[in-house]
Amino acid sequence: MGCGVCTLACPQGTLKLYRLERSRPFGTTLELGLALYAENSDPKA
Image (cartoon, rainbow, N blue to C red):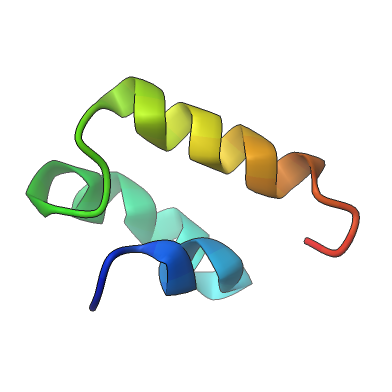
């Protein structure tokens, strides 16, 4: 899967983040939340 950046960038992958977050891509739920917020706030997202 990788580091999770590709998952964040992929609209279909966003729903999988909650599963992946526990295994590797993000160290904490806060980091995941901030990353999701940043992606959702991005005009090209």
